[in-house]
Length: 180
Image 1 (cartoon, one colour):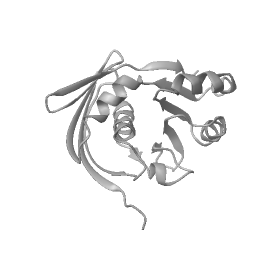
Image 2 (tube, helix red, strand yellow):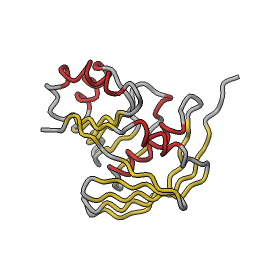
Image 3 (cartoon, rainbow, N blue to C red):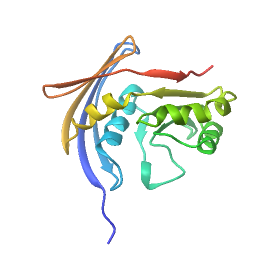
Image 4 (cartoon, rainbow, N blue to C red):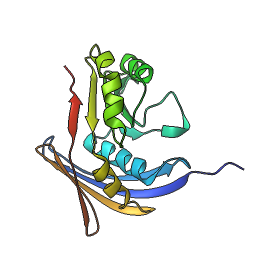
């Protein structure tokens, strides 16, 4: 029998001084059976870094033709495609063809090897941004995960602070590729 997704209730408060965005999002997040706490928390962090009223979490791991997070315009066009992990060059190429802007948030111990392998093939994508999170910081984020959480994300001058209750994790965004 197939395992079912685990439901997480998240109250995500975003204070983004860089974009002057201050909002609280009440999210119901389905964690796929094969998804780790680390990936779940990176997904929530990516949501916070791009938060706005039109941003949506998608089916994520349970479908191949959708990103983890997207933002659609009022006319249904894909404005933003957010992917997590280490997608193949083919997936990146397809994503860049579908959306106005694509952001890949990479993480994990093999992220640098992945980036060295594909970075030359991504230079032609002006709408692609690649941001890496260090493994030690994403593993710290994973420890904050719980089925019901109040997550506070503060962003100032590119610095990110994530807190749940009395626990705080500082996350550094390393930009490997910026949009043109």
